[in-house]
Length: 225
Length: 116
Image (tube, rainbow over all chains, first blue to last red; front, side):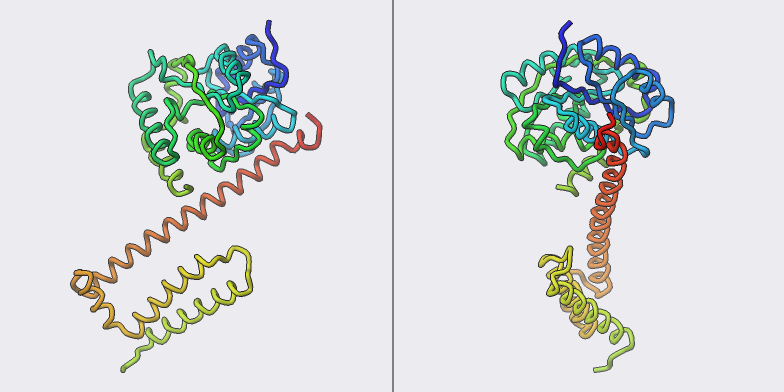
């Protein structure tokens, strides 16, 4: 089995007691041993479940948002000497096997590799596809960079990228803010197709981004820019 | 010219705010900027002038095609409220960011101290 020294996975989680242990085991089976899980103020048993899994566990005492949790995880990875950081969602939608393709691109010299769900969106709910394109459009309008999936949570960062990237947004606007940072620092980037697994569990989660949430995210981005 | 009590009070308040802002700016206090000074002066000098010469409001409303003085004031009031809301949203974003930073430092304290 391949192993990946110097590579840290950062998984932000909020109320994922049902699935988080599976996510961690899947990452381990894929060869990743340095896993940082950031519990973003969960009020279920997520923290206890993750504690049993022998990973680097960090905890926000209050829920601050996915962006905040990822940034905390990345700060931890930097302190622990990471060479490459990969972020992925804690709800089981991402397949850790996709990370290999992303790492190959990092080794070719890319600073950031963005996983894109829209290269193979079979099985993706229609409204989700529409919402993604809307997100892509507004990200392009505000930051001037077009990507096929501006809201994807599966991303890989080389050291040069995560050293200079500085984000301010705590919640869903974070994903678009990374695109801004790529443009601002002239980082090289590419997109790779990733598998996305929609299950009853993941689509029914009430913490997912809604239309109203999307509008609020857009307003936050406009105010801060 | 008949001056009423509200005109005197508003004029004094306007002077006070302009004066205070000028002092803060020339003392180079934290978070002062030329933009803030200019904004304060524009807003409060306008209030001062309109307070002392209320007939100017009619001239402006005729110029803008808004009709009665009250319409002009309501229109300006809406713009002012809109600007205040934007400013408040910016302040709230700042506060949220500070809260997150405190929570992050707490989350990272073991790693920073070398225990993990």
